[in-house]
Length: 429
Image 1 (tube, rainbow, N blue to C red):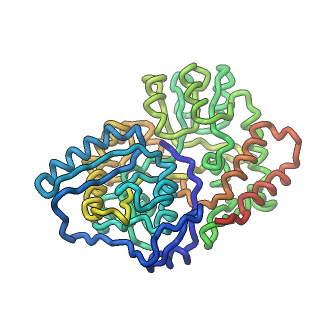
Image 2 (image 1 turned 135 degrees about the vertical axis):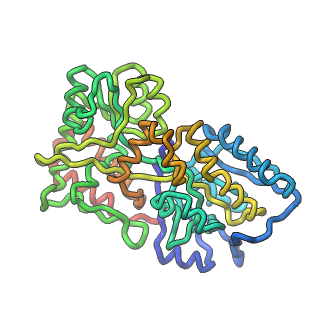
Image 3 (image 1 turned 60 degrees about the vertical axis):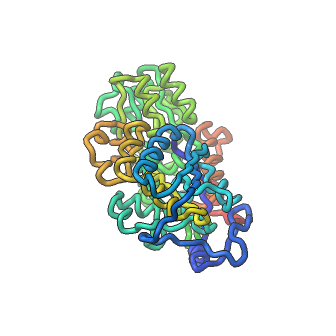
C-alpha cells in the first residue's frame, strides 16, 4: 500500500557523524543509542550461531499470510543449523520509523519500510548495513538499490518497485488514445456523467503537475528544508500557469477531488471511470471492471497552451535489519531470504506487488499485469520522494484551496507565494 510519509531526513553532516559511531535522536528527540554503545556490523561470511534463534518481523497485516510461506521455506532451507522461533507482527509501513526509533532495542529484528524512511533510520542508528552488498546490488534494479543506499552502502534489502502512481481507466468508456491527455479524459467522463478521481490535496500527488514544467523543487543540502520556485514569474511555464491549469481541471464537471477511499467507492458504484492511484488498488479495480480494467502512465495536461507530461514521486519497499538484533547474522539471512528472486515472485503472484529483483521484474507474468506495467512506464517521469516535513501541510492547504475553486478569489500569484513560503519554511527537528 502506498504511504504518505512525513519524511524526517537529517543533514548529511549529521549522518556522517552518526556513521562514525555518534549517537543521535529522532524527530521526537528520543535518544536511540545508549552512551558508549556501538551498533554491530554483520560481515558476509561471519559464522552463524546455532541453538535457539528467536526473531521478530514487522510487516503490513495484509502481507502476513504471504510472509509466513517465506518463513516456512527459510526454516526448511536452514533446517538443522539452528532452532528457529520466528514471529510475525503486524505493523504499518508508514509507522516503521516511529515504531523503531521510539524503542530501538525492543523493535523487531527485521522490518518492512518504504525508501523515504531510510535516512532517518540510518541516522537513528537503527539499520545494520546489508551483509552481502555486491549480491544485493547485482540482483535488484539500479533505482531500487539507490533508494536503499547511502553514500554507496546498501542499508536495506529491496523487495518491491511499485510504490508510485499512475492512471486507472475503464476501457468501456476510454480508448487507448483517449487516456493520453487529461483534457480528453475529462471530456469523456463529463459526456457520460461520470468522474475522474484524484486526491488533490496531497503533496504526493500534487507534485505531478509541477514536476515536468521546468519549475524547481527539492531538498536542501541540510537534508531538512526544501527549496522551491513554484511561484516563479518568468520562464515558459510560470507558477500562475500551473495554478490556472489546476483550477481548470478541478472546476471541470468530469473531475472529482477525493482520497483513495472515495475513488474506490466510485469505482464500485459506477460513478468513477478513471482515477490516479497506485497498485494497492489493482485487485479491487480489476474485480469491479473485469476485462475493461485498464492502466497506463499518467496523461499530459494543458498548461499555458502546452501539453505537459505529468510527473510523479516513485518509491520502493525494502526490509531493514535492526542493528541491535540479538541474532544479527540470522536476521540478515532472513531479510535476504524473504527478498530473494523466488520470494519476490511469490509476493507478486499472491500480493500483486511489483518486484525489484531484476529477473523477477522481467518475467512475462509481470509484464501482463496492467498496474505493474503502468507504474514502471510512469517511473521514467518520476523522482524519489526526498522532501522536508514543511512540504506536506503547505501542499494540503494549497490543494484544498484549488479544489474548492479558490473561493476567496486570492490572486494566484499570492496563492503560490504562500505555497512556496510554506514549502521552504524552516522546521525544528
